[in-house]
Structures are given as C-alpha cells and as structure tokens.
Image (cartoon, rainbow, N blue to C red):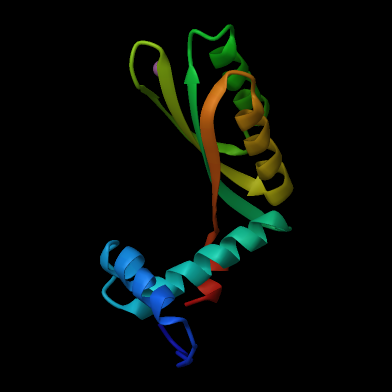
Length: 143
Ligand code: NI
C-alpha cells in the first residue's frame, strides 16, 4: 500500500456497532479500515461494471435442472457461440437433477454483460448471478 490518506467519518453508533459485529468481526477482518477498503473497492467495481468501456471480468453462476428440455445443450451452444469471452467453466453435478455451472467471462464490458444476462435469462435456469470483478490494470489503480 502507498499514499495512504487518513479520513474521519461520522456514523450513527448503532450503524458502526452493526458494521463491526456483522462485517469486521464475523468476516475476520484484521482492522476496520481493511473492511471499509473492501467495501469501497466492491462498490467501485460494481459501479464501473455497469458502464465499463474496457475489459471486464465476471463470474457467472448458474443452477439448472439438466432434465429440462435441451437446456444444457442451449447453455453450451451459447457459450460456444461466444467462446472468445468464456475463459473457463466448471460443472458440478449437485444431485440427480441439478447442475451448478460457474463460468469466468473476460472481454469487452458490453459483450460480457450481454452474455452473462443471456445465460441467466435462459429458460429453465433456476438460480444464478453475475459477479463482476476487475482486471489487472483496474486493480492496480487502487494500490
Ligand atoms: Ni450436471
């Protein structure tokens, strides 16, 4: 870390107590500052993901029933169609029916968001989400 700036903020006591208890202690942060830095980075990454112009990195999690008619094949087709954006995928058979698939997408922000949304919106996907992270250059800006 370099170029640290000390800031002072005012918070309601109850809000600070809840933060210390629910985030700092429960998540095992060494300091409150580290927890706050993570919150700020997380918010910046989310905000920037929505208007990303450069490269974007995202993790897409999908849970689906592989008995659903041609769903697995449709999901695979979509990923093959955008193979340049799909860095890697992990498939876990959760049980007799359900599959968990985690894919890492990387590429132009708009295309990554579009593919992630398309996968989540595929009929038969029961649960899922897109988690945006950031690339090397973005992360370096905040260190
Ligand atoms: Ni499976």
